[in-house]
Structures are given as structure tokens and as C-alpha cells.
View 1 (tube, rainbow, N blue to C red):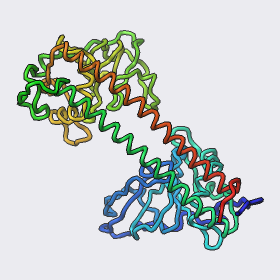
View 2 (view 1 turned 90 degrees about the vertical axis):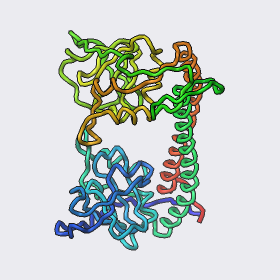
View 3 (view 1 turned 120 degrees about the vertical axis):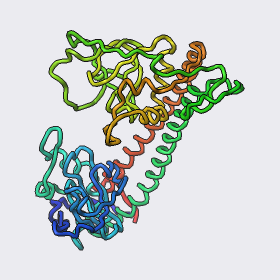
View 4 (view 1 turned 30 degrees about the vertical axis):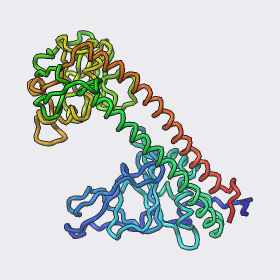
Length: 413
């Protein structure tokens, strides 16, 4: 057993070099590189994706060269804790200049230990504390190099790294299984909503072809109609701007802006914002293709650039909310949206009014809503439980790294 009575604390620059290599600006324009940006690394050290570019088409920040055994540390938005080890990379792997590339010095710092030492909580705290800036905190490589890290003997480093490799692999496997469960829950939730809203609850009901591709078959006693005859466009404006400001998201639908943790530009006054009433359908014109729409369940105001539609009496509000927030509905309205670029499509009223919607009876809609509310509440409770388990596993992983790296945990050879 190894019990560390004392580990040296040394500045990072003494045991590792920082940003040794970079692509030259004279690199062949046709050189193909694989690229990792800050958004591709999570706080657990996972690399989530790698893009491929020709050099002349790559982002200007795609310049840092990485080698096997390097560790990349985000020097911007440091609170995200984007730190990842580089293992057996392709020769053309490049990372953003938003990363500092840490390269352990031979016979001073073991690469396997380094990736854990840079995830130790005290080191991360120092990185964040020394960062400059409010909305976009950053630390430079010189300051990063001054931060001390724990440095046991090389043999101890390797023993600790081997131990943590085994233990964190087991924890990561558990986390991956729980995250897969979350994915299955999300799929189950969406399938439940889609089937109920477009097919109803009676499995034995006779069906008919709706004639609408995205709907397919619907119960024979249901009707369909153009949105033009189901909604009126509303353009009432706030006089004072004192009403509750609402946000429209593809994730949460229409919710009070005050409940959102967002750092977006706010207008000096909300006078002239569009007034919407309980039961109105609100569509974020610019992001409708992503599914940013939903029904409002309290009175409020929304951006003047949004569109507000008031049902003409054919719908239960909760039913229409479930309907329009289905991914297949977002795909359908995308067909009617206008714009040159897919990321700049806009859904204007005239186009929305050409969409065809299903119309169950109000009684059937209420039955569908009641069932979905119960089932989704159950799935939501299960989701919360699983997320808590994942959070505890991540906390255990972090604690294990801290204790092993600092010598508080007795690590078996």
C-alpha cells in the first residue's frame, strides 16, 4: 500500500510545457485537419465530437497541435471545466487556441497522472479564480503555468493513475448506462405524445388516411383542417410593458422569462411587446424550425418579432401544446418556412395558416391530455431520479480523483 505523507506542490510550468506547437499560417490550404473546439469537451473530460476541415476553410482558432499524452485545458469560459486528455490522436488533430495544450515533461510528470492532476478540484478552482472577465472569463497561458499541482514521485504517479483508470472506468460505465436510460425515457415520452396526439387512445378505433404526409392515418371520426380556420392572428400591443415577459423555447415551450437562466440582451422598455392570453399559441418566428413554439398558460407579453395565434374554439389548450411541440410538427412547419439558409428560416403567418392539423373532438382531446399529463408526470419523476443518480456518480468520481491525487486515499499498488 502507498500512503503519501507528503506530495510536492510545484508550478505547472516546472513539470510541463504549454502550447509547444501550432500550425503555421503558411500551411497548405488543402491540408485536411481534424478539429476539437471548446464546445466539444465536457466537464468529465469527454471529447464529444471532432470536425474535419480543409485548412483554408477551418476556423482561425484551429491552430494548436496536440500529441499523445497531452492534456488540453480550456482557457476561456473556464467555469465550464473543459479539460481532456489526448490519447493516440491522429497526426492531423488540431485544437482551438481557446485551449492550453499541456505536455508533461519527461521524468517529471507522468501523462496518465497529469490528466487527473488537472481535474483535481483545487487546480480547477485556481484556474477559475485567476480568470479575468465577467461574461467570458479567461486565463492566459502564463498565469496558468503559475498554478501549482500535486507532484508525487513518478512511481506514485503511475500507481495513482492506474488505480484511477480502473475506478473511473467503472464509474463512467455506470454513468453511460444511466444516460442511456435518460435517452430511452426521452424517446418513450416523445413516442407516447406523438401516438396519442395523432392516433388517439382507442387502439381499436377504425382509421383513415388523413391525406397529410406527416399525420398519416388518423381515427376515422377525426377531422382535419387548415390552421387558417383554426386560429386568428393576434397583434395586440402592451401600453406599459408591465405584463409578465414570456420566453419561447424548443425545450420548455412558453415559460416566464424570469424562470430562465439566460444572459441575453434586454430592451430598455417592453412597451409595444405583443400581448398574449391564456391558451394562445406563440411561435418564435425565427426558431420555429427548431420547434420554438407552444401555448401560453398565463397572460403575458412576448417579443414583437414573435407571432401570436388565438384558437377559434376547436382545441383544448393542453392538446395544442402537445401537438405543436412534437419534433415531427417542427419538421412539417419547416417545409413552409422562408429563408435562404436553413438556420435563418422564418415561419410567417401566411405559411403557418397553410399547415393542416388534426381535430379530434374536445372530449377526446381532454382524454388525451389527461392521460399524457399522468404518464409524463411519471416519466418526469423517473428522469429526475436518474439524473440525481448520475450527479452522485459524478460527485463520487470527482471525490475519488481529489483523494487519490492528493494522497488522502491509500492506493493499492
